[in-house]
Length: 366
Image 1 (tube, rainbow, N blue to C red):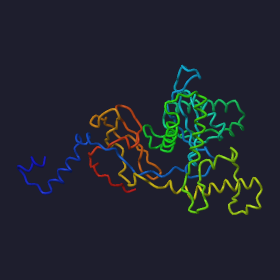
Image 2: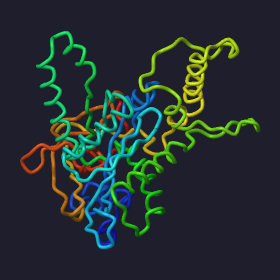
Image 3: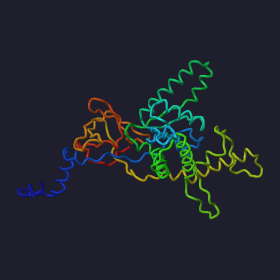
Image 4: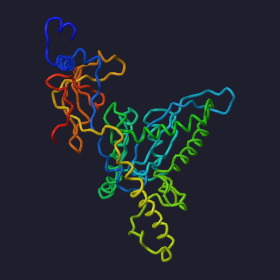
């Protein structure tokens, strides 16, 4: 373009002007589109508050895994899956084997999880059909139980239910905590199983051992003292205390020789949480990427919706129908009007078209 124009005209700062025109070309932008980004959000409150392990849990599935139906040499095989629960606070992991992806199989796994780890008040997951269906089934079951109980008991049970939270559709980066746990589980599973085909019982035993290994991983670096060879691990919060922890007064400054056996155990638990707060918690505050505040999307902005099965030049156009700003005022999730319907997507799946002055990516004044 510069060569063609220079044959007839001499334009000052022609190269900068040409780049500006190319950046505003919608056709060229479609073939070189880059998804929108925003500064990494703050950690949710459930990851910063000391609570009983698994009171706030994340959930995901891994698999499929080939399972044998019996120990016979030519036994039939079927698919199995791993249901992973991870504590949002301590990163402790609980693994369950499920035989299918239907709602009934998950509810059975969830009942086993709650029976061993105690009540789960908040559960976080993606928008998988299994999880959405299980959420509806649990709500119906809970409402039926409340109707058949006296009012005072129903009011007490209302505080014992599990609240299910779903991340936006097509946004795995919102569930990085359980995605990383799935990656660690598969890392051990591939190296142990290789090409072997296990039965349901054998896989359950293997997952229990992998769970023990993952819950023994260090959460924070070792102490600088040469005599301290211990590291804080998720197992410290799971072993040696009851399922329901009773709140006790602070015993960190008490003389250990004057404590009863129960007070000694309680002081040990508080010591673990003290190390969790002082040595591990601050390591979660570092932003490894998405460090700059970018321009917020606005209602009626025209964008391209990223489609994994199509080339960038064929991504569908969409209009921003509604924005969902976070607690810090930054927009990371929007509702789009695309192809006659409303869809909710993270900004990492959309590209803002360079029209109406949208080429500037500087931060808004908050």
